[in-house]
Length: 427
Ligand SMILES: *Cc1c(COP(=O)(O)O)cnc(C)c1O
Image (cartoon, rainbow, N blue to C red):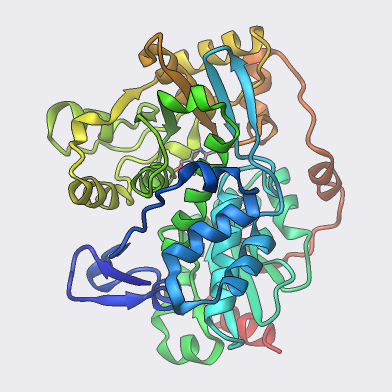
């Protein structure tokens, strides 16, 4: 597989390099040079999830990894389903929240972990990351129990919710969690100091496993195929897919799936009040405003970092940006939509509700609609319970975690102390 840096096109890397490096020079994003096309889509859709995902990812990765290697990565990463749930005669939900941290990021995070382990061929890796809550859980669960990979997660002591803390600070094994006596910025500053220390970086094989890693997007392509595979031939004809978007990784993956031949008539980019992209598609002017806090806080992003990949892909495919549907939804509308969905028999959460709302506003009578449910309602329990007057249960595996003892150690916001910890966790 060959990828190039969108900002510095002469920088070309292999899959392995792209996975290890994350970003290219000048903070440029990597993008695949060749996007394979599948001619017999029906035959591909007839395969089971793991077989089909192996076919898709092997075609992308090419001969850099054997099919057996890819199959093993896929099998280890995708250990939970991506089912459709019928919301109305015309609309289905693609539920992406059946993984260990109850959000779609489990697919990308776990495949990235498998990719990193595979391309680093047994060398020692230390993943160091700071979290204000959710990413820590996804990273911890993605790398949990993997040989040769240590994970060190810093978080601000007392400043994340007890459930968030329980989700990643009770694992043990290769997952080391450190409560820092400071705020999130202090945690981030310590991570930055570690990456700036070239000797340390080399000594412990430091890697950030960050959110723009191409392997995440590649994994996400697979569940768009899995969604369409579950639809009847008739519904596949005129399919519209609505994606609740923050950093726009999910939409990038969907457009890549379409570029590979998946029959999707059009996509809708649905956002909350952080509406840089819908306004840009309307006016042609890129004018981010300060980020505002909303009910759908995983989408509180005003400068989406995957957007350049979408522009690149649309340009290469000759797709005009005007063909993208778009819509921005306020918190009041989100709450209203959640209530209406619940009344009609589907329990959703704010991110999915936003995608559903824009989809139903724009769906024509002869079209079939699909929207992505990116998180389990229990993940946003406080907001959902308040809006719907419910008391929703945590899924059993999570309820179990919430009762385990915390294994974190506490540290002052001091880089020298962190260094001691980083060296001590090495074998
Ligand atoms: C990360 C996230 C999103 C946004 O996805 P992007 O790929 O960043 O657009 C939406 N919903 C939930 C629950 C998320 O965690």
